[in-house]
Length: 211
Image (cartoon, rainbow, N blue to C red; front, side, top):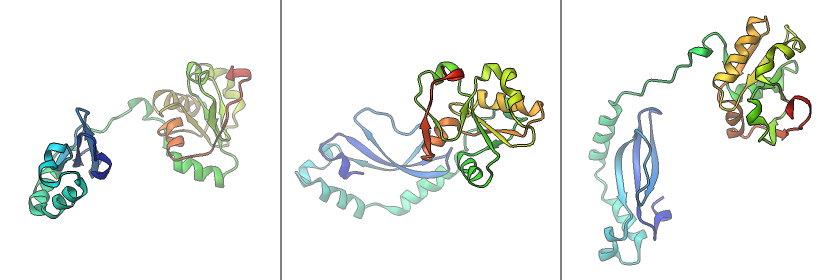
């Protein structure tokens, strides 16, 4: 990462992130922000003033010298101190308490093993009108008109709903379906969780409710 900053002002930081309970390498160029809430363990200064007098136009030698001279006992002590930092309180979504969730990965597996599952895209209409793609095999339904299309769903087959990011709209729709006796759950992370794991997509056809 330091090599990637050669010729550019910035820092390379090894930091502990309490919310993820892991170490992360990142760069901070000029006056940009580092990872929010992270605790620095090691910092490598890649501004030219840090190495030019001794190493001239050979920053790679400076980086190698830095790595040879790290006092690892001190770094480990900082790491142990960072481990004592409390994890942030996890976000709770009370609205989803009565509806089970499923991950994008588990939905993909489910689709491969259970041909009965119905995947329903309930992203709000104003959002879908700007989109050009949809999860492969899913159908879009207007979340504001659940009462109009709920009768199309068989009560004996599983249903998975999802919205943009997997919060209120997907949860509310799944809850409404469950109250009607349908085996529904929502996909955590929504449309973008599916895209993040590179799940298959298809062109969103603009007809009927999708207009």
